[in-house]
Each structure stands twice: as C-alpha cells, then as structure tokens.
Amino acid sequence: MNLVIALLSTRQFLTADRIRRSVAGYEDCASDEAFSRMFERDKNELRDLGIPLETGPPSRYSTIEGYRINRDAYELPDIELSSAEAAAVAVAVQLWESPELTTASHNALLKLRAAGVQVEPGAAVTAVGARTRGSEPALGKLLAAIDAGQAVHFDHRGTPTEPYRRRTVEPWGVVTYRGRWYLVGHDRDRDAVRTFRLSRIAPDVTAFGPVNAVRRPEGLDLRETVDRVVGSSAVTGTATLWIAEGKAHEIRRLGTSTGARRIAGRDGAVVEVPVRSRDWITRLIASHSPDALVLEPADLRAAVLGRLRAALTSEVRQ
Image (cartoon, rainbow, N blue to C red):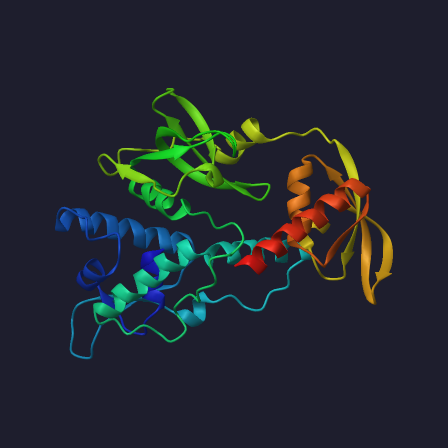
C-alpha cells in the first residue's frame, strides 16, 4: 500500500534507490540484495493485481529506470452500486477515515514530501473527528503490532464490571463483528486461541519481542473464529421498524420490507428485522436515529429512547 501511495501520488518516475529511501517498509532491508528481492516481489504483485505500473527515466538526461503508476489508467470508470454494495463501501470509507488509519496515511505522505517527491494535490486523506463510529483507543497500537509481527501486553476485562487482568498475546488480526471490534490471537498465558473485544482492552498496549516473530496460522479465518466465540444464530424475536427512504441501509439489509409508510412527512418502509442480540440491535437503531424508528415491540422502543437520552445528557455535560 505504501508503494502504491508513493507511485500514485507523483507524476515523476521514481528510481528504486529513491523508493527505498522514501517509502515506509523498505528501510529495514538489511542489504541491497534483500531490498531488490522485496521490490521485485512487490512490483510483480502490483502487476498481478492489474495496477498499471509504468517505467521511464526520472529526468531528461538520466539513464536510470524509474517507476510510477498511470493515474488515468488506474482510476475506475463511473460505476453503479446496489444499495447493499453502497453500504459496504460506506463502511470501508469510514474505517479508512478513522483517526488511527488517517494518521498512518498522513505519515506516509509526509515522508514522501520530506524525500523531495512531488506529491499530487488531493492525495492526502481527510481527517475526521475522534468520534468516528468504530474507533477504539487500542486499535492503532494493535494494528502496528500485527503489522510488525510482535507480541503485545495489555490489560483486559471480560465484562465492564470486572477488574482488568494482564494478558500476553500474539496478535493475528482485528475484525469487526456486529458493530464491535475484536482481536484474535494466541494467549500465551493460557496457551490457547482467544478473542478479545477491543472496547474492553485498556489503551496502554505495549508491543515487545523480535519483529516478524508472530505469524497468523495458515488458512485461519479470523471472522469464523470470532463467530464461534461470540456469535449466535438463534433468533430471539422480531422487531418492526420504520426506515426512511434511502437511509439506514445497514439495518434495511438485515430484514424484510413489508410495505411503505409515511411518518412525519417522510417516506419510508416498514421492515421486519430478526433479533439475535437485544443490546446490539438497540445500539444499531439508535445510531441511525432519526432515520430508523421502532414500531414494535414497545420495550425495544423504550431501550432505544433510553440510549438516545443518555447520549444527549452526555453531550450536554461535555
């Protein structure tokens, strides 16, 4: 990804030596031979992905070969998305714009500018507020440790009322499941695979040990691992919701539309949604207010209203 950002952010042809000095990830190569192998592997991978990698001289009088990505050939033409596809893209964009990943992208571009690479205007990723949905304090440090292949120490509690306990984990990856972040890895103290909800991990995560010592097992599906631990396929009930037209696609795709209805001057649809987790569906509906309203059952409507009132009270205090 760093190489794509570098080659896509400039109209110049960048030499291999300049790429080595300016692109994050290559500075740890122990020798010219090691860099050459890594760079050739990355170029081949870009070509296999269909990325239009071009070669040419970095200046009029240079005889050294340089590299860049043709932006016009790289960018996609206009495409049409279904509502479900648009919702998936929106979630991906929200993740990329989270504070943790925004910082990483800005750091990569700053390093390119410091190396004298002319970065194209608009290449930087726009930052968003720290309240971006899905952001967790420990996420950035865990992603860095996973990328470096290092083990981590952190404090974790199983429930919000339990005391924190120290854990030593070999992190394999982080996934989202039903609106929450989960870390999957090998717990050294228990010598077993464990799943940790990020909201219950203290922010002070410390990476330790040699780099590239931790590797995810071949063929392991992180999402399936989380599903086995925290998932439940049992439907405990059904909620009848009103969804505003063109809104709350995340909820709409969970259920079945039973007809149209107009509320408070807004067109929308009545949707029957299966309920597997009352707490999760309450948080989901509240996050889409006022575009999602609970028609039935009454206790779920009261739970959503309670969450919204609590959020309003917290906002006023701040």
